[in-house]
Every structure is written in C-alpha cells, then in structure tokens.
Image: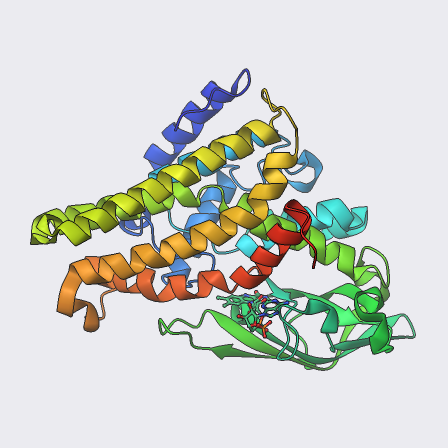
Length: 397
Ligand SMILES: Cc1cc2nc3c(=O)[nH]c(=O)nc-3n(C[C@H](O)[C@H](O)[C@H](O)COP(=O)(O)OP(=O)(O)OC[C@H]3O[C@@H](n4cnc5c(N)ncnc54)[C@H](O)[C@@H]3O)c2cc1C
C-alpha cells in the first residue's frame, strides 16, 4: 500500500525503506515478524533493535522535538507504521510507552512529566507497564479498588493489579488508583499515578501464558510510594485519562495489523500449496474467506486514514470513531479464525512442540494460541459490541 498523502511524504517513505534495508540485517533480519505487543519472545534482540531504531530517529515520529521526537505529522507516522509492517521488522518492546503512555502524557501530563519521561522512553532506557485491571475490575474498570492516600506530599498506594503486559520488564508503572474511598463515586474517585517499580513496596510476579511466554504479571502494592506531582491529569480525573489511553489502544495501534495478517496469510497459503491441503475445497473456501477479511480491513484502514488526514471525508471524525471499536472486534475474531485454519492446514504436527520459536509450525502454533487473547485485551468483544451499539448506532443500553 503506497501513500502519497502530502508533499514530502514520498521522500519520507524512501528514507524509511532505505534505512530499513541497511539496518534490518543480520540477527535483526533473522527475527523478522518475531514477537508482538503481548509476546516477549527474543526480548534481548528486540531491545537491541529498538535501540537501533532510536539511534536512527524512528521512535516518536510525531512527538515534539523538545522531548526527543521528530515533530512530524500524522501522515508520516502512518507511512512509517506501514513500512515497518511491510518490512516485518521485529515487534517493538516498549509499545506500552511508545503507543499508550507517551501519547497520554502528551495529552494529559505536565510539561515536567513529559520532559522527565519522554526522552528516556525514546532512548529505550525506560520500560513501562499499564496497571489498570484488577482481579475484580476489568471490563468494569470503574470498580478499581487499589487505594492511594496523600500524606506529607507523598502518595501511599496499596492494592493489586493483574495482567500487566511486560510488567516484569517495567521500570515504571502507570496505575489507576482510587483516591476517594467512597466506592459509590465509581469513576469520579479515580486518579492516574506514575509509580517507580523499583522500590520495596512494589512486588511484580510474572504469569506464564498459554504460549509459555511470561507475557504479563501481577503487581502488588504494599505502601508503595510516589511523589505528589506524579499525578497525570487531575486528582479525581483519572477516568478521562484512562479513556484517552484506551482510545489509542483500540484505534490507531491496530492500523498496521492488516499488513502483518496479510504476511501471515501468504505464509499459510504457501504451506497449504506445499503440503497439498490447498486441493481440499473446504480449505480453499476458508483461505478465500481469510483473504476477503483482510481486504475488508484494508478498505476500513483506507477510510480511517482518509478520515484522519481529512482527505475528501464527508463527515470528518465519523469513520475513525466507528472504526476504533469495530476494527478491534473484526480483526481479533478474524485473526482467531486464521489461526484455526492454519492449524488445520498443518495437521497432526500442529499438536507437537519442537521448541524452535522461529520454525514455521511454531509460528503457526503461536498465532493460534496468542490470538485467543485478542478478543479480551484492550476491551473484550462484548464490550466492543456494547460500545458499537450504544455510542455508534445510538441503541438503548
Ligand atoms: C494478553 C492480555 C494482556 C493484557 N494486558 C493488560 C495490561 O497491560 N494492563 C491492564 O491493566 N490490563 C491488561 N489486560 C487485562 C484486560 O484489559 C482485561 O482482561 C479485560 O478488560 C477483561 O477484563 P476481565 O479479564 O476482568 O474480564 P471480566 O471483565 O470479568 O469479563 C468476563 C466476561 O464477562 C463479559 N462481560 C463483562 N462485562 C460485560 C458487559 N457489561 N456486557 C457484556 N459482557 C460483559 C466479558 O466480555 C467477558 O467475556 C490484559 C489482558 C490480556 C488477555
């Protein structure tokens, strides 16, 4: 997919392609397509690759220059993400900070918070984890119970978070806390705090997932402390900060997914042709369905890009708002169907683990297993359907 969205973007695209050709080599090239925002496979190689990207000035393309970014526009960011997905470069490790916390700080944080944290994120010196969900508060995030109390200019935090992606790699956590003990206030009593993970009051315990990857963690806070000025937004205004973060998780972060799914499907089709399953009419039909689904995602992406950049959009903003919920719902279920199809194409060998994470069968097993989580994280499919029904279609609750 080529974009000529604005003057200079063509040159920018050539610059990325040339840089990727020159730098995505050796061990980095051997890890093409490895990892995901929820898979910590080959962590050290991917950290090294992220530092390479940082040195090349490819992190924080749209972030202000005073915080270490390139200060470029949305068109350049979209082009970068597409070229990155096309090259199948290893998945970035600090997406929590690059795609979620960083933009949230730029939107809701103070100048001091941005100056302190953003340059370190771009230099790949500081990893972040998201502490929103709790054992009793996931879909219903307004029920968060982790408490924070301000005493002598210091916040004291007690409680538990769970499913913190890459929490055991995190240096800092952004944590949704209840700062007003009155539970009936629900979302009005919440505040977002930035908490240093390296302190005695924070205990992070990794959880192994279905893929045997230690992808996420439980985080326990026992009088964890953070200074008064580590509040993002207003005290009691944590809900609007969370909504800013989740809007990014459900929307823009999904845009390049269609390209990586196309790459996966090309591999699955190649395998089906090689092992003869492509002659089975049922497999052929499912492969065609998989192809059509990805074309639908492409068409939606193009509508969203046109909408974001306001190119001939009849109703600016409408396509993006609708796509944020529906793209996540469609992409996650479509990806799961692709995983099931790929396992059927592999056949009985799909049941065996050969221990080589770069092997073709292992990659397919991982696709099948890890896609199970896609209809849960970032808001479950049921929640996306509720949002679509109530906020986009205007149906009653
Ligand atoms: C791989 C992965 C990574 C994650 N990373 C993070 C992270 O980094 N940080 C973080 O804070 N959290 C993270 N999460 C947690 C994730 O946000 C929650 O799992 C998710 O919001 C669902 O919450 P829950 O697990 O408590 O399920 P529940 O909310 O208990 O839901 C259980 C079931 O009930 C359904 N349900 C709930 N409410 C409704 C409703 N109103 N209408 C219809 N159906 C409903 C749900 O759809 C679901 O099927 C991650 C989860 C996964 C799987």
